[in-house]
Length: 181
Image (cartoon, rainbow, N blue to C red):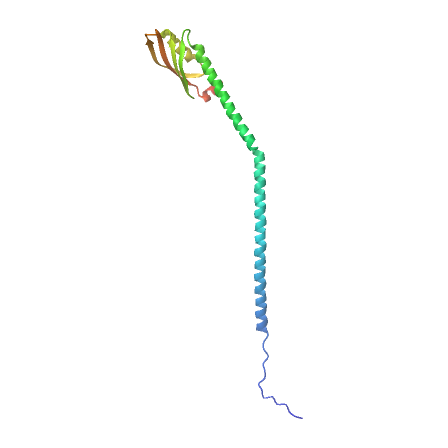
């Protein structure tokens, strides 16, 4: 028999461990990247859904708030009603003032000018005597809705043989009127 002599160097077996480690690490990295991408995509979808829900909830809140507050027509009706109420109260107060002033004008006297603001009234009255002008002044001071009365001038008009008097009446504030009621 022949002897088999191999003069070639022995082949060393290649180690498979580094290859397996690199392969395992590569697969693990790919899995992590894939998992991260999947998480990003699912969170983006959740964000879109949440934004959609928030928008829907905001719309629902607006509808409920408008129902709670009433429609715009109801709001306008309430505003008009409030304005009407204020006008009525103003008309009543002007009516009361005019009634008191005209009721107290002496016989033979005339109201020449009447100017009213929120806090005062300016009057110009013609009377036949200065005593009538002073009596009118005293009568105005006795009226409860007037806070103060002032005579500015009493002038005698020779051509007409009468007296022209200018008065300023300060009206009571609403707080005082409520206190006295």
